[in-house]
Length: 111
Image (cartoon, rainbow, N blue to C red):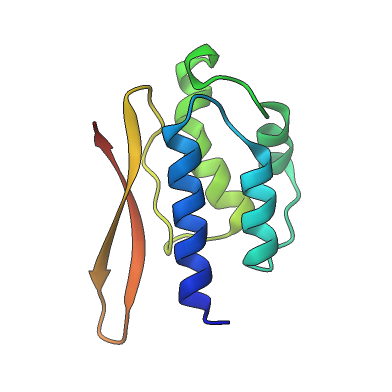
């Protein structure tokens, strides 16, 4: 299967999770499997600990660290770019063009 399609599926799943009310580790596990990444380490353990914790119940510092933790687990930088996870915000799909191909990026927008 085309890697680009896999990446788009991961972006769609992450978007859906971030728009929700709580963090879901199953999305991270499925994304790691699809992208053939070995999910482990401190970042993985922190994300696993907050499985099903409502975003609004997290300390702001923890909530804002989620994008970086996801990047660490999935090893996706710079393909996926997260800035922050805040109540009232969602990850919005956008793309940019490089010389060789288009790559998906994630950007938070206030909705």
